[in-house]
Length: 105
Image 1 (cartoon, rainbow, N blue to C red):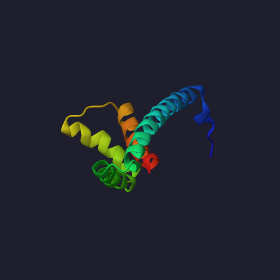
Image 2 (image 1 turned 180 degrees about the vertical axis):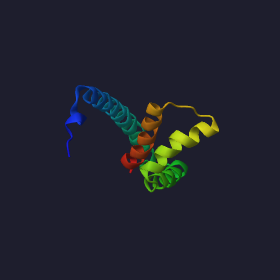
Image 3 (image 1 turned 90 degrees about the horizontal axis):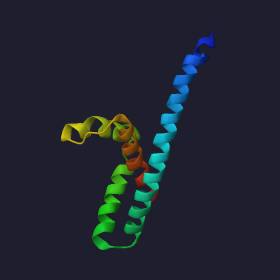
Image 4 (image 1 turned 30 degrees about the vertical axis):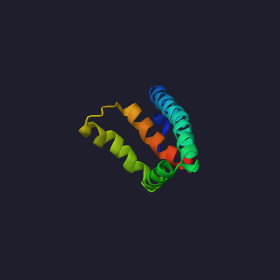
């Protein structure tokens, strides 16, 4: 098989653009996940009776959902209930939700 056409300058430009978007989504998700995950982790382990139990249930539910399901939910279901986001912020929101639950545990 000949893959020499895959590494033409035209394709490399598209690959680099995809890399740029991937890094941007990752950086935004990491920043928001640390903020939200840290905050929910502190609230959860501060032994505030009502919030600790509610956050524990929500975190356990989110941790047990597949990431692909959360991505589909943010991209397809949220616009149905009136929350409009472009694909970039939809990906950031999905990764932030998923990773915040992992970090708060």
